[in-house]
Amino acid sequence: MPIAVPTHLTSNDSSDAISNRTSSLNQSVESSVDVADEMAVRRFCMGVLPLKARLEPWMVRAVQSESLHEWVEQYGSPLNLLNVDPMRRNVGELQRAASDAEVELRVFFARKANKCLSFVDLAKEKGWGVDTASENELKQCLQRGVAPANLICTAAVKSETLIRLCLNEEVCIAVDNHDELNRIADVAMKCACRATVAIRLGGFEHGGKKLPTRFGFDVDRDRNLPFELGSLPVDVEGVHFHLDGYDADQRVSALATAMDWIERLQDAGHEPTFIDMGGGVPMRYLDEESQWLEFWQQHRAAMLGKSEPLTYRGHGLGTMFVDGRLVGTPKVYPFYQSLIRGPWLSKILNARLGDGSVADRLKSLSLQLRCEPGRSVLDGCGMTVARVEYRKQNADGDWLIGVSMNRTQCRTSSEDFLVDPLVVPSSKDASRIADETVRSIEGYLVGAYCTESELLCLRKLRFPSGIRVGDLVVFPNTAGYMMHFLESRSHQFPLAKNLVLSGDGPTAELDLIDQKPD
Image (cartoon, rainbow, N blue to C red; front, side, top):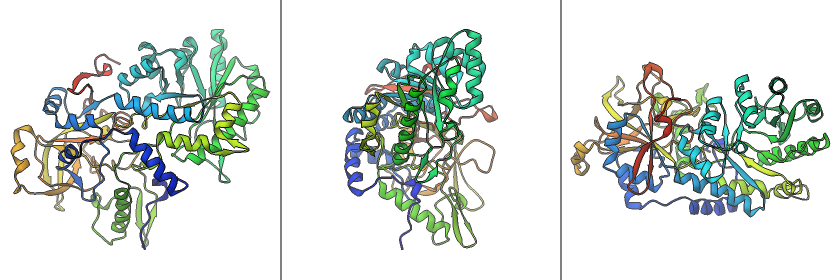
């Protein structure tokens, strides 16, 4: 019997027909890479069970550029390479899906996904919104000239100084709980002003169950909130929510309840104009679904002792072997999803709701729909490059390749980066490229922290032409959350520099975030 991939790691398409249609549409909006160039940059590294990264043309050019080693030499290892151009395409894809449904959409870039100011500048240029999650993020956006009307503050914890900044600049605040609401009201009264807020909701019901969350007012327990707000110095501009995961059907349930809340707010005398459905817009890291499914089938078999491990010391990636059976749930991002961005949003907007669709009800209430994607609008916008410093074999005979970076510089909450890195041979040692006698080895990339768990990739990788000191390891598509969300200066290591590339040259310049102090 075939071993199924865990359901939470796959797309939630309702039919093969939808999957086929949306897959072809997704491919049409992603830039294609020359096949020969793609094969050339992939040939020096692959997973023992490959998971091929989806590459952008600019990434291939950068990997093949003679400047790559010079950039790492000049700016240090690791080095983040960025290109803002794919962001235009990604946001445009969401906008087109909304336009097709005749729904007004405003995209707010989730700033926490990447700290570089080049993305803020592009958002300002295009008139997109920016979702800020801290006082520094908000200050920097204001300093870059982003209009307050194009900003929202969604910080999980809001200090009084952050609230004062929002009030002084007239930035909308997503209000999460009663204590936060009371503090905002108190500061507003002290400042003799009114606060612009969006009420954040949680506890939506889907499939007969409440969706768990640590954020927002409960849609059932706090039903009287719209009427309680009337005595406070706040203007309710909209309703806000964020759901964990990427399930389109859950968004439909949440939007239906959020629109009920809009009507309740209107009945209480408020004039909300938008619903913000937060982030969680899916994207795709991998080229081939078959590789994704095969990996999980073989990984499960390995965990059950039926084949050789695919991960370091049989790491379960969230699962474990207990009493003869495999338990737990993989704790990784769904690196392959067939329904992404525009088609995913179209599925939500076209979903049936009462006598019409979600889009119909939004229009009947004259509501603007907002969303706050981070990862998916940064799809294709970055890579992380690091230098190999040593190779050795451990007591088990496994090859360990020491790379000058640490695991926080290419990781989020996912247990592993399930995408094959690229390897760029040292320019001083390029002769081995054509040497068929060079020994192929298999092993693991390890980082600079002094812990046994310091692996950059838990999967076993194959290096067909070997790997040597001075080679570069390139982690593709890391702009969204991978670069900065967990980065740490433990051991007093410096943070990675961020180099922005543009043009076919390409030209390169440090992002402004690295040109001036915080």
